[in-house]
Length: 319
Image (cartoon, rainbow, N blue to C red; front, top):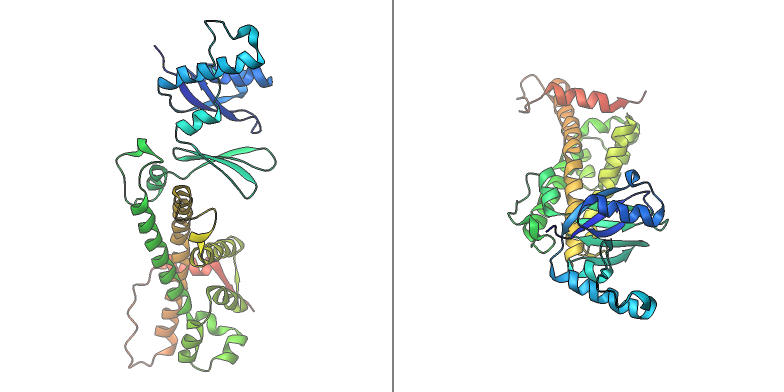
């Protein structure tokens, strides 16, 4: 006999909901019949099987409700609640968590967050360990994904935090040592020697570095957007993200949100590090070509045409 299943039924974005049914067509029919949609306009996504013990519990609750609100059907021996919308008690029994944050109503079930905007529109996003590992192979893998959200993701989380901080350090080192950006008139007035430049740029914040870069160079718009996003996420990361309501590291949900944030940040770090490396390499090429005496030994570096071309494509010297 077919088992009852929990479905997430999507229609117009405003009537999306959880439905209990035995198959996807039945789940879509519940939503179509109640809200006047054509069944073809609804999509049913299977979330999980429902343990048999909850069917009797649901029927009893429905019968008790009927005794008060619909007594004419209360004694019907064939009275059953399902197929129908999933009640909150059932979602809680299945492991769902609920919260309101930034004026959004949110439900976490397994590895998916079902969020309702203040406008009433629903959207979903994944914060699960499996989904994140599939995007970032550097994070530890688990062998019990069916147990989400009950599995301990601390190993993934702390690995991601370590990787993120390391990437920040690597990227900031490359940018802060890229003396190609010392060509602006403002920087020339500040620093008389390259030693002065390096000491001065060591003290700059990352935002200060990016601002100084733009004194001498025009930055391609999409690169500028990527740099601004990196700066914003980097500042969020290092300035207390783990104590915020959304990313509270002391809660399971907060840990999962934090892991998703770190996963996105690590993905962004890949192109940003290439850009930073291109700035550093151009600086070294300038030093080897124009600044060293013939008797001096060149600074060893494995230059690549790809990185040099990347710099040329990203930065245009102001004239």
